[in-house]
Length: 341
Image (cartoon, rainbow, N blue to C red; front, side, top):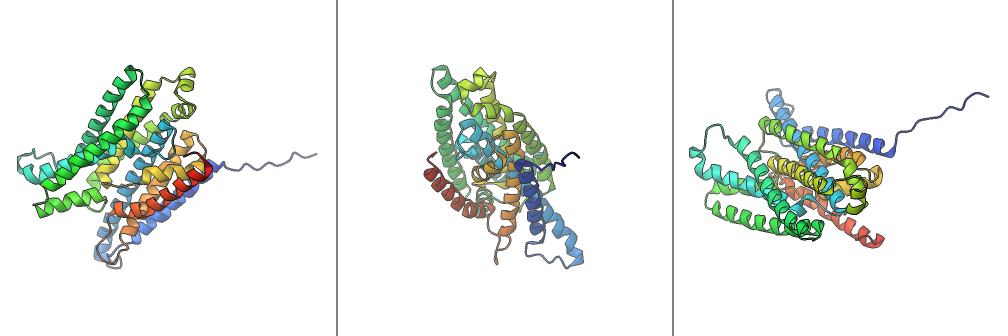
């Protein structure tokens, strides 16, 4: 009797990654074509394509970073409705970026020549995210040494930090309100967007996001074990304190890089991982690559939608909010029906 032929079918996670890669390609093609410029003009076509390709690259980097940061936070807290903003690092990165814009706008002549705005803005965002992370870890460490619940402390301290940094950011915006161009720059940064960026931003963001994505994937198995609880993970050999530190640190790097190139963009880290989890399963080493592609495709598509406005372009953060808020509401309703909220 001849042997039966068996067909090997790709797993749902592999199919998900392939579909997301296709969606990213479609979104990138739409991003190249969308806009008010005339691609029929041969003299301007190269410039238009270069500008739009830069926007696509920055949107993809920011979307991938935010989505993977959401995966890390949701895995750490064992809550699919968590987002990187709960740590306060997103607000810290935004405050760092706004402070740099204000500093350059008022004291630019006194700053060293090598500290150009393209380099200063990412550095400010990373420093702001790092400051928020340092404060978070310092307070959580004291709580943990006193016998308190570290994860609850992270949530509470993150909420306080996010509120405090947002208040200081409002003060920075008020200080710049009398200078029209400076105030407009701060408003544009806070509303989000990748339109006023160039290839230098891409060069600065690629290593940060690339290293952050690889590091997040490397901690995937630890996140899988942490899903069973910290005591069970410790019994299986996980150094819970070290794992928590590095997961929070890489989340801060990813969110800082995303804010540096995309400004204030909401909902990506919240909804993208949760929407993909039914297709990839709970394994973080399968979910993280899918989330990176899904976040990139989502933000590239939203950036293309920004340019479909008949007047001036819509801010990227406004579009992601208009798309993400209904999805988040649907997730809340679904969570209530299934009883896991």
